[in-house]
Length: 297
Ligand code: ADP
Image (cartoon, rainbow, N blue to C red; front, side):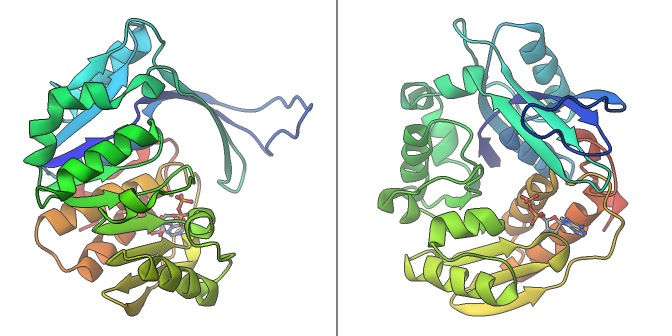
């Protein structure tokens, strides 16, 4: 089982010729409402690969949370351990997407902020018995650290996508089997300003020096730099016409985890994730854009 521990949000998306500047109002185009949240997106990406996925998350009592649960169930995701928060609304994200597929996102985390270590005590067996624990940074850091430690101590491979970028404690870093970072996250974690392959390699080396075994730096259309057991690999991106890059990183992380769960070498899992993520950027939306295995394999 791949246990995904993370956020569940409802995305409200508006397409626009350009992103609004502070203080500016723009009349945009079409409106879409989708299930989102990095945790949920990665769980869906893994489930669409045919993997056995358990999603641990927290939602409110509102209609958005209820719709999310229904969506996850329809994907075949195990939702038995999704917590319901009586005191906060479900997470919401307001997303703008411009004409070249760039996005701007504002999140109201709501119930996601209340997914605490005390909740995780109720699902600790699921975490300890997982094949992989996949996490992001849209729930409280204390919970991420708590779950990582429980997983690591039970030989569960911990995969972290530290997004949105945040500081990682020594304790958390020590538990990681693999980390997936984009340019800004790589910079946040390593302190190296990342803008191209050379600086991505430099950042990966820094993260490797911290003790992480496998590091993946995603560079959007410029491909992927990986450092696997201290060895550097470059994987080019697949040439596609990008329409909406929302959830590209999430697709990548979810599919990558499935590859590793299936026993693929990390580099093979990267190639698989690269294909899936490339296909996802050719479509609008977050979860809607995440491909099924038979669409790209
Ligand atoms: P994030 O969306 O988290 O910022 P990236 O932009 O690096 O992360 O994208 C993650 C992955 O999605 C990339 O490594 C690549 O596999 C794929 N991807 C993103 N943008 C493109 C693109 N324009 N063309 C092809 N693949 C892309």
